[in-house]
Image 1 (cartoon, helix red, strand yellow):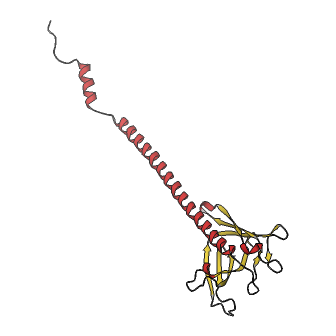
Image 2 (cartoon, one colour; image 1 turned 135 degrees about the vertical axis):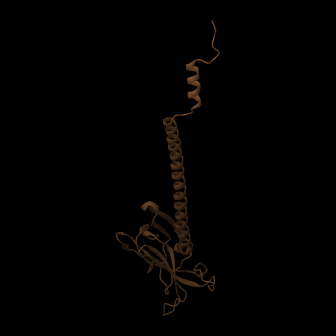
Image 3 (cartoon, helix red, strand yellow; image 1 turned 90 degrees about the vertical axis):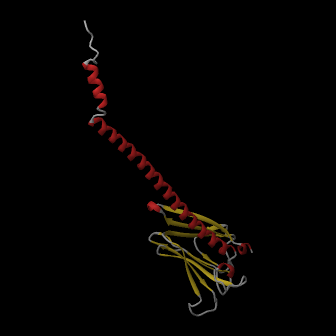
Length: 215
């Protein structure tokens, strides 16, 4: 009996099927899985980048607000009370939120003008107008016109500007201040509320000790 040296039929069929490669269904499934994985990876990357950008924007806005309050604190810390410019704090509201104003005298070195002398007194007013926090500076205390007034926008998207004053004689915090018979407050609390990203409100506080207030 002779043995055939040819490969059995079922072996040949299996080999041929293997050489044919993946079926169309398998290829489609593989492509779908790759696409799904790519979507998940890029989606996660997009969310991560978005979170990083939001954090950076939030940090930048927070730094701006705190820098603004530090500038105000520096000027308030050496403020004085004179007849030519009484120390005044007005309690106000705008659209149901605090919109206070402060007016005082301070040294010219903080007013930002190149011609200011270190010993020159200037009149400074902080006030909220609309959604802006503004700083007005009058160089000539005895001037009758507005030519000597400088205006600077300190912050935007401001939803609240609240100021409280500590009266050392009465040992209490007050919402308004009139320097008549009091001089300057011994301390001031500044509260600035701004609108951040995603319509979130952020309130930053700054305590200020006024050197002249203790006298």
